[in-house]
Amino acid sequence: MLELALLGILSDFQFVIQIFIMVSIMSFVLNHLGKGLLSMVVILVVFYVVFFIIPGLSEIVFILYSLLMIGFSTLLVDFFFITASAPQQQQAQEGEKPDLTGNELREKTAAMEKARHAGHQAAGMLQNMMRRGR
Amino acid sequence: MNSQGNVLIFILIAFAVVLLIPPVIITIFPPAKYLFALIMVFMVFSTVRAYLGDGIPTWIISGILIYFLVFKYLLVTSSLWVFQILLGVGFGSVIMWGVGTRFR
Image 1 (cartoon, each protein chain N blue to C red):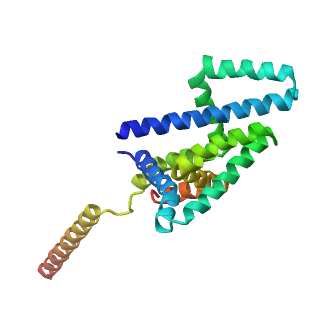
Image 2 (image 1 turned 180 degrees about the vertical axis):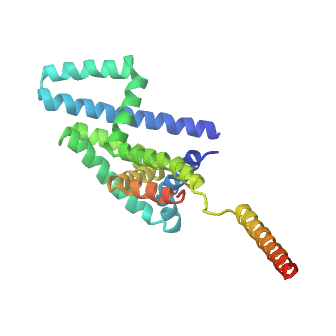
Image 3 (image 1 turned 180 degrees about the horizontal axis):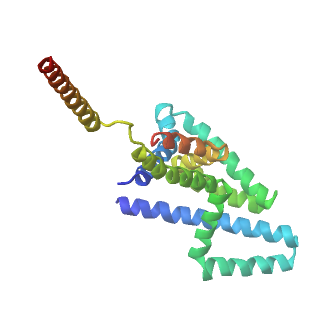
């Protein structure tokens, strides 16, 4: 049922697109050649080519032309700007490291504690030596 | 999925939301259907008249298009019309920018 409805919609819109193509061709030829026998012949030849030789291609090209005319290309430009900047921002966020990580801070504190302890020991030994020297 | 795929999905969702504006308006406020239909009729007729000028073919082709686009598929046509209007005034770029800010 859904497939039938969908196919119905598709065929109807295909028909509508063909009417729009037909109107576009008539307008184009009449604008260039004016009303007359020659323009009627040209219109019929173009109709034959568009609707009988390359029907699918002409519909696709007309849809693309319509999308580009209403500004779809600006959407594509915006999209590629956004998606191009997203990985760079991700890399930049990954590349930014803090000046001191937790492990480094812990190691540095332990080393300072050890040095302070060693300093106390050295000072104690020096005091003992000085006392013995007296 | 990588960030490009996420951006694409969010952009598609945003545009689907934009496309759903006319059906939602018509559902909430049913008389809006007649307003959309009137606008569509004027739009179709003026488009065809711009192509073919005044004459019998304009009336015939307008009638065919109005039957399909206004009476048969009003929701689809009004959604596409709103989408076209928003694209024309550059609202698509705003949506892209808005979605892009979510990934910074």
